[in-house]
Length: 253
Image 1 (spheres, rainbow, N blue to C red):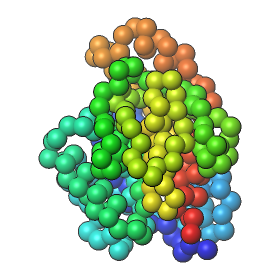
Image 2 (cartoon, one colour; image 1 turned 90 degrees about the vertical axis):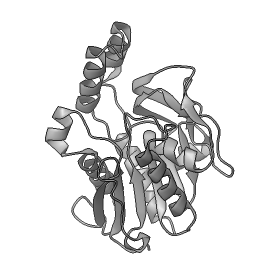
Image 3 (cartoon, rainbow, N blue to C red; image 1 turned 45 degrees about the horizontal axis):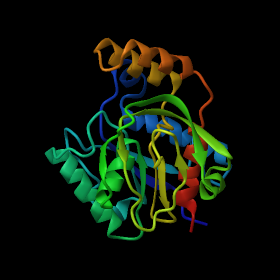
Image 4 (cartoon, rainbow, N blue to C red; image 1 turned 180 degrees about the vertical axis):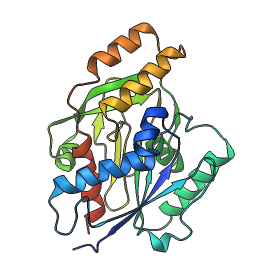
């Protein structure tokens, strides 16, 4: 049995909008809520929302702060972001280099979500760029591969989506897990190394509504895009299922 607590460093790659920030403090708080919900649902000895998790949060954008030693953590979790994963801002290049350093060793594992999924892909040498299919928004169903069905314990999966950038090709050795019509690489996985998803398991209906309304108000989303997103925003989504898969991935010996 792996030793608890699971020491997870949450690398915050963005700051949430006002209402989400007021409720959770930051994306570290959003992911803390997700991981605790997954721990309660998993029924693993010693692991719950109140025990077995040692979560720390690091601002890699403004403060550019990172765990001082990999010896002190068991995993890093790369959050989503409004920024472009293919840009060369100093903080993004520093993040990619840090991920490469984690990939160069074998003990500390990596979880990537949306922007974090793309940063992982970039660090592995995959092409990351704008999608020719445009935005993918709100609750969206995914097709799962056989391995995806095994890992998530479902025949299909639904998650909130909020992206127009994608990973274009699978890095060598990666097991495909999921796809949608607009994004063929919805997840990446190598046992005991890393797992990532393009969707947002951490998003709630409330968080998605705030982002959609904000991006519509600035003109980034058209009226049609907003209408389509809001029509699907309250549908069932498997965020806690994915959280459980993340934790099982970390517990896998």
